[in-house]
Length: 170
Image (cartoon, rainbow, N blue to C red; front, side):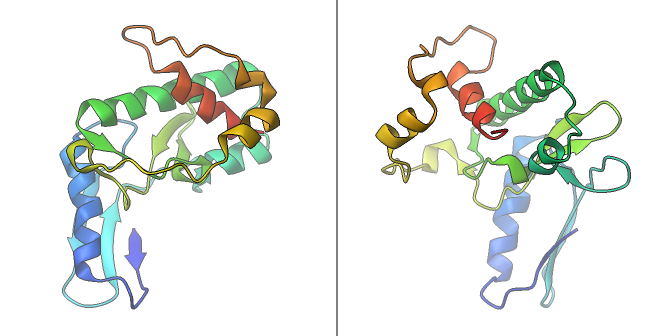
């Protein structure tokens, strides 16, 4: 359950996240919405809880605590995350805050689930912004992806997306 306790948060801020998740539709890599409570503060968004060994394990935690045991497992989780992201985009939404703490690992099969759709929006409402990242510095910091050509294969997640996801585990 997501509890919105901040006094700055209003009931109007709970609905967009619930609307985005329900608008995207049913997918194993996205939590189900069970309910929204906006009668009085604190406001609640009741979502499906995904666990690994009875606790919530983010991709960041899984990588740092060696839950991700080898390169093949890492590649599989990143591939599945790209597929979920592609599903979200095909449904006309952007997540807008994809990071290692917004992906949890679910169940014994180590399936990724993308969470926290609070900043998501419909693609038609998206605005392009200047990146906060200095591209030149990033290219120097991550030389292993600097010269790669991002060739998209029809039916596969974008290599650019997957390259950016791979940076999470550094």
